[in-house]
Length: 182
Image 1 (cartoon, rainbow, N blue to C red):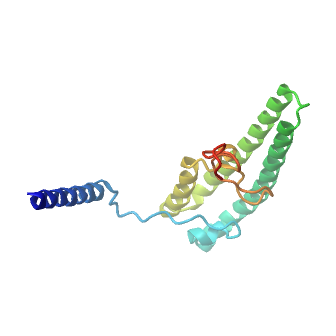
Image 2 (image 1 turned 90 degrees about the vertical axis):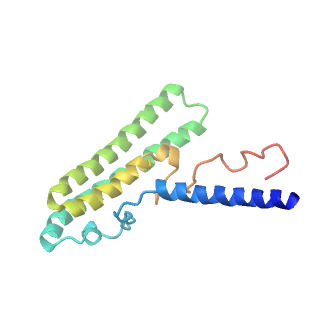
């Protein structure tokens, strides 16, 4: 009797695992569309990444070079405004109104960067064919959905001089604090 119960339990587990596998494979996206390719490195021009024709490349390169310079300036401005805000948080003599005013400056500067990127995308679109538009805009849409533009919650991203830190509590704080653990 025990043997039959063990076999029945084993068959039940196998059936459950098989059912889970089938359900998972049915619910997965089986579209024929290839996965989006990673973004081009910052030092690679968009013309190479999108395989533009020479005519397209010339038009887009002009737009891209102006965008890169303005983006660099805006990113530096955002980093500077954020650093000022961080210093204000650390200074107990700074008033609440001054902190809020600085937060507004950070927001305005970040918004200017987001606007400039959006302007670049809409300026480039007419120079691309539909496949190139899809590739470029899908990449940026993925970043928007992931909150890539919001460095506020996701830590400083890339090359602004501060250490990058993913989410979670600061070092030395968290789950095991006060319980003798790390």
